[in-house]
Amino acid sequence: MSPVAPCCYQPPNQNSPAPNPWSAQCAQIAATTLSGEQSTNIEIQTADGDRVTLSSDIRFDSSAIAYEQLGRNNAGYRFQQGRVVSTTATGKVELTVEGSLDKQEKREIQKVLQTIFKMVKSFLTPRPAKESLHDFT
Image (cartoon, rainbow, N blue to C red; front, side):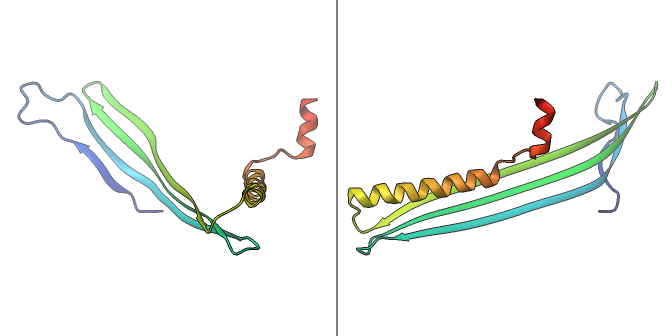
């Protein structure tokens, strides 16, 4: 965990004709970041030497900050806590073919890719435990 550090301060505006009724200070309590990148290449070679390559690149970045703020005006104090979360993800999928595929090769490669996509989807999709399914019957 990071040490507590000031992250904002709103002093009264000296140039404003009306005084600022609020004065606030806050401190960053915790911050974390997470990044990842994955590249995958799947290569299929046919019997007559044609080559099909499926490439994917995925990158994600995520960060979270928790903070506390104490504000004061003429009437008293106001305390707030908050969190700021930011997430971005980018991905690219590319299919390249070296050679010329006949209709049969295209059908067979399509079946292979569909099987791979089903396996990935099955892996990424959470399934409830069999015991918890009985709770809804």
